[in-house]
Length: 114
Length: 113
Image 1 (tube, chains in turn green, brown):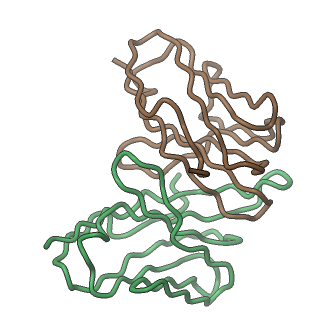
Image 2 (cartoon, helix red, strand yellow; image 1 turned 180 degrees about the horizontal axis):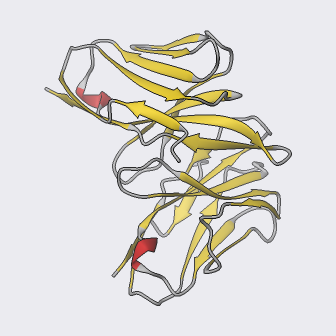
């Protein structure tokens, strides 16, 4: 059972366009993290959001955590070819004592064409 | 480089062989995680260590899989009698505190022929 649903699964756009990808769940998470992963590499953390309604900006990337801490979105302004990659969201939940276990979505594969 | 390192980066083996992967976490990170990622999927949790103690294992971790972290520093993941379905990217991550960020290594790509 996939607890985190990411949409769209694939996205191909032209350089300079804006885009938004979504991460939705029926579960409440302690925090939600966004990662970017390039082929053959491990995921690299972009941001962690903790508070419901929180908005974080990282240059051209804007991350929002839903009020109920069940969903999140990532908006990229003026996409560049270097933004190409697999964008993964991961929700953290306390599991068995002190372990905050991450549950990942399947990711959105973004291709930015020159 | 003080990030999480994993060796080897790639492993090709024949079905039925045993393989072992190594993960060196960031220094002083006492929490270490193993994940498996197959094509088109996000990483799936396999197991978790706090120092040398293995505190949680996923149902994905069959009896053929064993993980150790003998001195609370590096960790190994062994797969015995590999099957083609074991082909995947095996990722290691570490973090310093209960709710701290997890930092991932580059992964080991396993191909079972």
